[in-house]
Length: 504
Image (tube, rainbow, N blue to C red; front, side, top):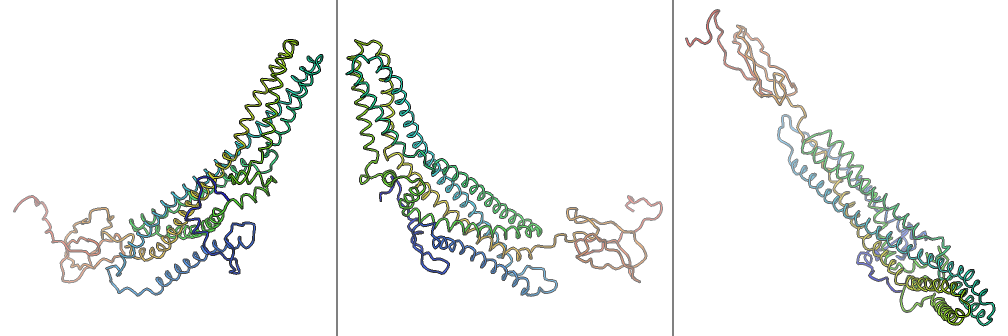
């Protein structure tokens, strides 16, 4: 079968079409596109189920890794301050995985746009084909009505005017018969009239589904982008609650990514089977839905020299009948008008109708040729089998990168979370906030009671180190920096009435 102009199955179509297929019993299934057969449906469902298997394996791996991390972690020595070995590597591996996920999101946006462009090209081709078919029906209806009106009015009045000349009346009746023959032949040219399958309805349904598909992928891409960005923000800020929330969201997006991967894989495989040999399936489906003759469908879908125009005979007969009408009207104008001046008006109206009919006839000849509709057929295949299929493969790559990046992040986030320092470490013993100056002390008056200074505990956020009296020691003021309280030199007390600015 001849291929549409400008369309050739791409390398991706050939590669996907050669992949083995099997049903639920793992029996081989032919790669021909047959969505109505149960075995072929099972083969596509099995392709989608591979993504479900990958989701199950990834969840099991993540669960085993986290259980091992939580239960089999070696105890830290008491008082250890340095992070465990490999902690920085874990954090950077999580960041690298999230950056890979962001790159996959960019690929997903591009693939979503490519798929949308391909489907839009398919819808545009269907709309243009519907316009061609509607124009054919409109021209046929207009021409038939105009000729019928001319037969009922102008030719009838002309026969009444020429009633005295039987040979002229016979010529007028011959023109009537030719006009009726043209009308009968033209009615057979509107082959799409009354067909239940409408390209306009198909284009609207395709656009409706594509609009929601595009929106769903945009929301999925934005959701994953927000998860990646907020996870990176949580790692940078060392915010435990943000990391925990994003870990839960990452698990949700991981499930969605594997689910979309299954749909994309099954759709890409089925589309490659269709695009490898689309003519056979389209011919059979259109013949079943429309009930048109196979000669008409072969002429428009194949459009080669081996298939002749099924309307050629009707067009030839109509053209001859129009030429006969034109010659008869010219003869009546030469012979009848000098004797019957009243015949000039209906003859002029008939000639005008004949000119319009001939113009419509030439448009019908151009529209009924297979070039126009076959060009729309090729444009629809290019949009579906090139742009849309490439977009699906890019979306498949996005889902794969997303699943891998999120699985890596889910494994790395708990270890990175364990490296975060305490959220509210004690900054000052005097109760000052960490943003306040570190040195904030108050001089204590000297008392004769001996004191000793105890070490501040790290858990106390704002506790002043209080002196503890001891016998035989001298008391002095103290300042706390972090967990340590250090003594300050003693300031001698002033006697009553003594000036503190006196150098003596």
